[in-house]
Amino acid sequence: MLKPKSYVLRIGHRPERDLRVTTHVGLSSRALGASGMYLAADDRKVVDSIMDVAHRFGGTYFCKNNVKWKNCINIFKRNGGKVVHLTMYGLRLQDVISEIRTEKKILIVVGAEKVPGNMYELANYNVAVSNQPHSEISALALFLDHLYDGAELELAFPDAELGVLPTAIGKTVIKHDEYHGDEV
Ligand code: SAM
Image (tube, rainbow, N blue to C red; front, side):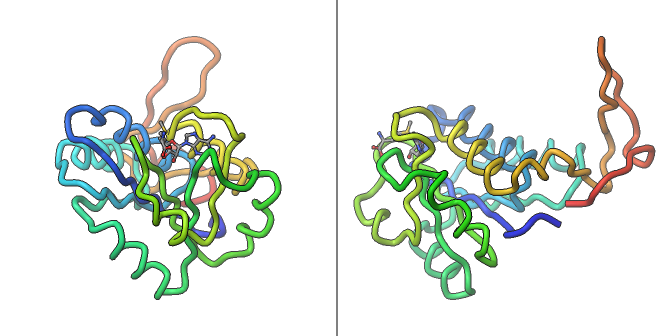
């Protein structure tokens, strides 16, 4: 099992406009070892399309619709977790990742447009994946890869209806019970 356990909190999501990006935040975090996503907006379409993939491709990833972002942060902290806010203004990923690896569980916060000012104080770590502006999807993917040091690429997802057999050319889809690997 990957350590620390990680969860994503998506804030600032605008239904319709951010549908594709937020769906990809969920799918990328699932594929790269996170345990679930809290969505601080009411958008069932996003949750349904992430959970459709999660059911077909296995594992225990969850997606919770319409959370109150401050409550989510406070409850997570009260339960012993630490909050990592991804922001281009934060401390450099490469300088803080080894300390973050020692935490029990982390909530990774990613924004959409402008993030509320108090997010910087609520976070235990404000982390920059380079100090250049880019995207929540790339920031999250790189953060998770550094957090788990590549081990997330070895994960297998139990109870899947579908799995992919890596092939040099073409596509091979298999039943998951023919698949072997570390479980999420
Ligand atoms: N301009 C917005 C602001 O100042 O809050 C950020 C917009 S950006 C498209 C959306 C999200 O991507 C941010 O909230 C942050 O989570 C993430 N992001 C973008 N660049 C980043 C970076 N260099 N390091 C870490 N996270 C980043």
